[in-house]
Length: 201
Image (cartoon, rainbow, N blue to C red; front, side, top):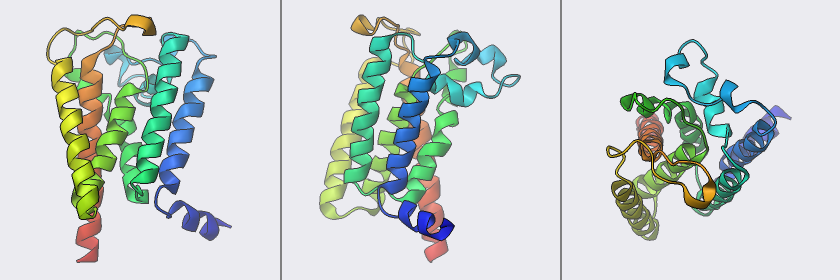
């Protein structure tokens, strides 16, 4: 049974969909808990280490949760269509807590929550796979997505104001979270793919 499950998860996109589903279900379940016990607090990052994971699952409003669940579905579809390798899904999993690491660069950000940083990590991880390992057509797609992501991050000005109005989401948006997530996802994907290349050499 274990070997069969391992073989299924090794199929392109399979582990990616499992992780996306886990994030979505975790976010839905987290709505039943006190957000203050789960969100990102830099002052408690090392005394309450679960926040490195739980912060992504907490949302400030129903609209915020709904938007990120829709985003999760889109990232899941992107990874599936790209044939995200199991190693790249592992990179996304590793980027989940590491996406919070970049938040320490903005110590004025007293709290942070939401899946958007981790979703940006997922987009970056798959894009790295397309650019590094894809066919010519896939590399073109990856280049366009990478360019779009970089433009989006630049327009959000992650080194500008700590937060921006979230509009209908009902919560403020912290652009540094998107930049930190993207960097974590890209770095983790590069590491696992480089490790794979060395192992194959």
